Image 1 (cartoon, rainbow, N blue to C red):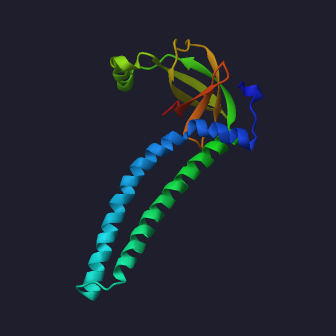
Image 2: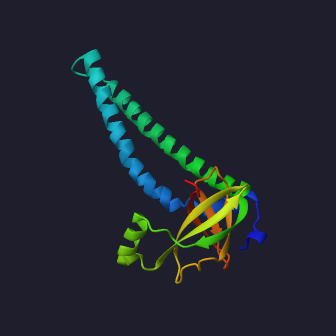
Image 3: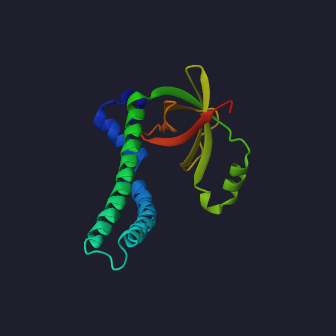
Length: 191
């Protein structure tokens, strides 16, 4: 897809949003969240048992088991509700990014020498990953996009690229000549 052929329709933007906020990533976060939710639910359940024991003494009333289950399920499900709200909000922000983003022309610059660049070059497994920086200007502000891509050749220094950007979203999208796109983090050039 070339930026000139870019459609701002809701269905197209939702499909692109799934590429930069993939479902598999949410599954990974969900696995971590499962343990966090369990770690919060267990103390709430134990606290409920202790409170019932303190209020009613031993043995606990027959209805206490049902109350403990309701409190435990309520805690667990409300924590998952928070997770699903977070997922929905991330996808909505990504969809809005594709609907409201501004196109900009960027120029590839040489990578600066930082500790991250040095460590990146030491790892033999990152040989097929290429790093580059794109400088672009939107509304008089200059920004830098840090690209990490699986490419056979690095982007030539001085070449141009088309980016989709909005200051309210933490990523920028760099369009590829073959029609795809790569997401990258961005920062202000003066920062």
